[in-house]
Length: 253
Image: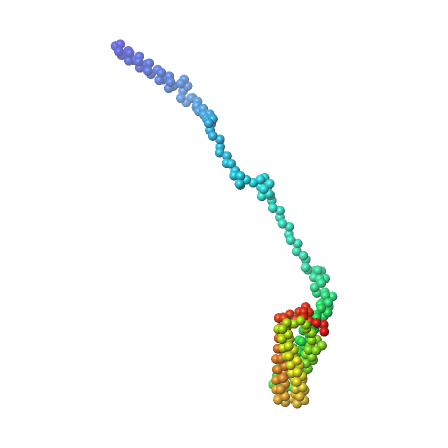
């Protein structure tokens, strides 16, 4: 009996603290929600090493002035001024004015007028040959007259170029002297052939026979070849040996 009472008492003692801890005075529905306490951040340890700061290399270091110059804004370049070449400037320019054209047409700067006159026989004698050749197939005296006129003009131009306008040279080299002798030989030969052609053309005008026209064509062909060779040697004297260029190797007598 005493054992039973001890067991009941022991059960009461064990269950009493359990009810007290598990339940509060307030019912279950009225129990307020518990807010968790904030956790304070842990302090950094004193033995923490400082952050690593890179040390700039002295070879790559720049001064403040260099950095400022490198980052300075680049000024915009000013537009290039283009001169105005229209309007009044072109009308009043000195290139095509009447005064300059008249001054340029003067022959005072030329040491000799021989190159100007020689173009007459060089042009007229081949034209005379052409008209004489046409007169052989076209029975009209007009072409014979043209052949005669151009032959006479070529002869006159050759005489002016050979005598009054012939330049006098001085101080020529051996090669230049030899070229000048060949030039004069064919030049004088052209004059003699042109003179013969003038007389043959007069015969053709007096009696336009086929034989006389053939003789005129032959003489003018020889004169045309001679004047061409003369012009070739004249160009050699000017452009190869430099005679007459800017008055070189020319004398006043």
